[in-house]
Amino acid sequence: LARVQAIADAGQMGDVVIVQVGNNGYLSAKKFDEMMALLKDVRSVVILNCRVPRQWEETVNTVLAEGVERHPNATLVDWYAASAEHPEFFWNDGMHLRPEGAKAYAELVERQVEILSR
View 1 (cartoon, helix red, strand yellow):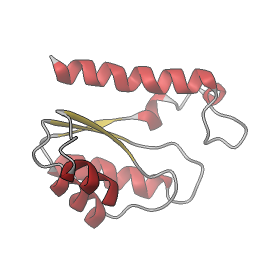
View 2: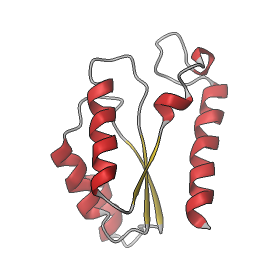
View 3: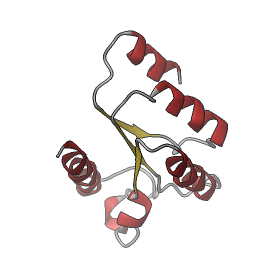
């Protein structure tokens, strides 16, 4: 939240903002809504869900999916589904991306931004 606020305060917020949260711990609906309040004037907010073999993965992805439903300027990009059949995208920890995974992740984001920029 502090980082989003700092970007907003500096007048550096773009028309499209890409947000990835949730790999390092739980995210509450309250925190998601606080973030989206800071992003309320952004035309399109791209929210990426996570694939992380940790106990919070399902909870975070649910919070993100439900949060996107509450905010009309938010779009969910489903990295969890896109990476489901691709263990080769990840190092042995199942979380950190190998180069081919990073490329797939970036391409997924790029496609969504292109759609939103039309």
